[in-house]
Image (tube, rainbow, N blue to C red; front, side, top):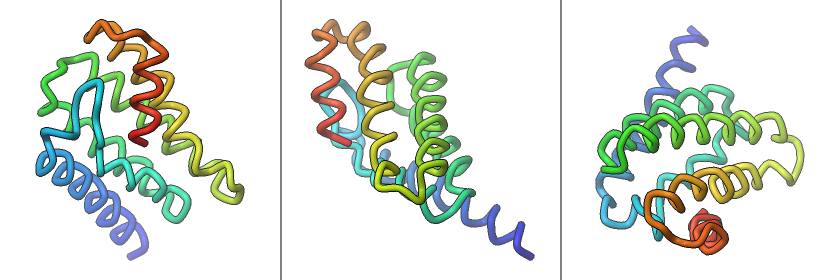
Length: 130
């Protein structure tokens, strides 16, 4: 029964992530964004199944984001790494940092190339939105 609950929770997290991104699509994508779904990236502090849930949610949401394969693959993998790091740090106040740091540094790298913004300005924009 425990595995059914874990799978259901992971699926629910993925679904909520996708719905939030799509419902708020005008502000969820791009070099300047406020991806409300990123609030869910702290769930690995409480639930290990949030890790695959966030990965699947980001993967599906990024399909609809319009930035192509780089965002679908890289953005989703960055979410996976941040979620796993959050889980590893769950007993520390540092657990709140991985989504900000990973997205700020790594998502900004490809957004900088796609949009032509200066890298550090992109880091600032994405980190602030986290």
